[in-house]
Amino acid sequence: MTPAPLPYLREFYEVMGDCGMQRPTWEMFCAHAADNAELWPLVKGGKVVGGVFFKGHTIHIAVKPEWQGRWLTKRLRRAWDTYTHECELFAHPHTTNKAACALAERLGFKFRRHDGEFSIYSKEATCQLQLSRPC
Image (cartoon, rainbow, N blue to C red; front, side, top):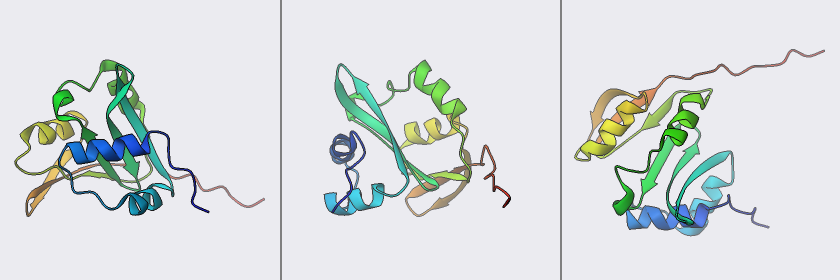
């Protein structure tokens, strides 16, 4: 039995295609998302126009072209600023996508290096994993 996908996962998958991102098959994407993934949908006028997908230490942001540059609201920015993560996060925008590179920097990511066609940015962990001691 396949687990139910995250809410808005299909819509996010479609937006990825609208943005020209190379996508795995739907089945592979669902399997990837089924284990500890988190999705923040971006909804405007009742329609999903994008999303922020967290999986492990990687973030994928996809926004329909007509919403690029105007989707990051103050409310979402406040949520981002309070988002805690236990590991270093990475963003890999295409080197030619200057807007995405600037966004990574505005969100607190630091440029690390170029890797072929991509710029590699990372953001340090904001909290430490708390291990409970046995009783």
